[in-house]
Image (cartoon, one colour):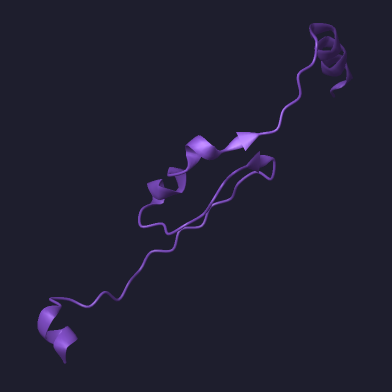
Length: 66
């Protein structure tokens, strides 16, 4: 009864946000999403593992691509 006395409204709807992340993107943490934009809250911690190659290697790799 205390809740009904102190709460002006009862929330009946809570939006559910679903989003996908490429498997090569690391460091993505998913927490509570109150807004769709909240999925970017930890974007500064996201990263992709890369490998440094020389210019010659890059040209050879590029030519082998379809």
